[in-house]
Amino acid sequence: MTIIQNPIIPGMAPDPSIIRVDDIYYIATSTFHWNPGVQIFKSKDLANWELIDFVLKNGEVNLSGTNTPAGIWAPHLSYDSMTQKYWLAFSHMVNMAGREFNAESYVMWAEDINGPWSEPIYITSIGFDLAIFHDEDGKHYVSILEWETRSGYQAPGHIVIAEVDLDEGRIIGEWHRVTQGFTSRGCAEAPQIYKYNEYYYLIIAAGGTGYAHGVEIGRSKNIFGPYEPHPSGEPIITSSPRHLFSRGNPDAGQFEMYNPNSPMQKAGHGSLVQTQTGEWYIAHLMSRPIEGTLLNPLGRETSIQKMKWTKDGWLEMKDGSNLAKLEVEGINEVKLCNKLSHDVFDDFNNEKYSIHFMTPYRNQDDDWVNTIERPGYLRIYGENSFFSQIRPAIMATRATSFSYEFQTKVEFHPDHYSETAGMGLYYDSNNWIYAHLTYSETLGGTVLSLLQAKLGERIEFIHNNIPLDEGIVELKVVYNSGVADIFYRLKDNMDWQVFVDNVDVLYLSDEGVNGEPGEIGGFTGLFNFIGSVDSHQRDSFAEFDYYSVENF
Image 1 (tube, one colour):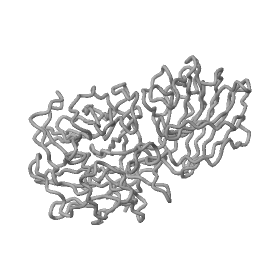
Image 2: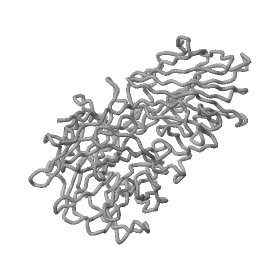
Image 3: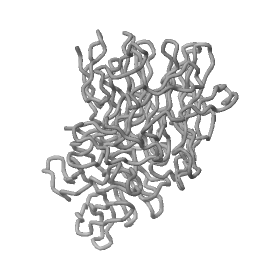
Image 4: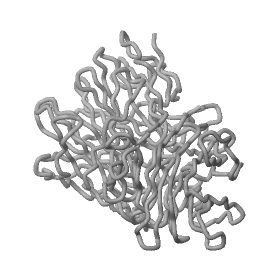
């Protein structure tokens, strides 16, 4: 028997939507304020997942000015075997102020998972977490959370289902509410429809995306319900099995539901798949807090659980419990592939940089980042401050481990104090730390400096300035469970020198950023980044020789 080790996709990979086409599995995950949008991962064994593409990479959405944690939410991947088309549904959350949660939901299609994808087809603005179901008779249906804004009504709303003309983006008939009394944990979202034997099954996320999160299930012989809830009245997957009634809670962190006996937290938001061998699994999100804390710097990651159908037609975990596990039984008669490394290395010797690079709030294009103008280097033209949600010049990759080394080598020749270039750790525009080269009027040349953003506050390390006469330096961040040590060296054969050590960066986590009391401030995750700022004349650029992240 093979064993799958969770998380199967570490780092920011939340809201997984899984499908199988022949003997290949695909997962789509959320990307929020990061571009390209919607990550697509591929696997043959459910254990090792390779990032193969992004769907929203040609300017289909404008993420400029996106507040944390809005942006691209909960993509749903499906395959219509009748037309042999891949379909992707997603919601673009454009506003969360006043708990209005204004979102626009779209669908796209492609004949190949690698595209090209159609232009987005608008479906609705009724809520978020749109999903598609292709029925056996050729009809198509969409399910979504209908967001509720009125005082005194079920918060945050109900799941609704409607028939849809996918080609025209037209709802046929009415939306049908299907989850009155469905869930005791409340916060029903992420609805996905499946058909098994004579029943339609509705799988939802419940309890909010914090420590009470779970996967719940109901069934009906009519796609429009009513849906009978699971006889246990509890989630079929969760990290916190004890009973919770919170149907009126709109969506809180539920920190009191932390389970100290589970290394996996926040298990929920599931997506079901049947293997080529007839077995069943659910991919779901999860988090791993730093030991001794309730803080999750890696954000929400993707895990998987093996499932079974009971004799009376209900879905449950293979071991009969509802507690999500780190180790899961693999697919029968399918050998595990070679273990996939999550290290990142790019020496920029190719025309295109690594697929792992993402950028907050804007698209990637040759106008500001490329490997063409100086072959063997990544050139980044400086733009707005990293406090800005408008055109920051940042290239970043997801942090995937609690312990790692992150290195780069940068050449930069600033002539003004508002021109900077370097590397660091990034959560969003209010929360980051940045070791960089800049111009010092006092010293009359280039220096290495450190700047931090914490909950929107600017923190300058004014006593840490190292002269760099040649404007070239190698930089290294050693990250260990929320603590960062930063090093530099001027020559390849030199020993690394401490720049600043023992910096507390644990706040760069979902619970550590700007949230209301009892709420999760974000749900994206920590990134490593290189970048440049030019708030002077927009005529400076930095050149990076390599980029390396080695996990321990």
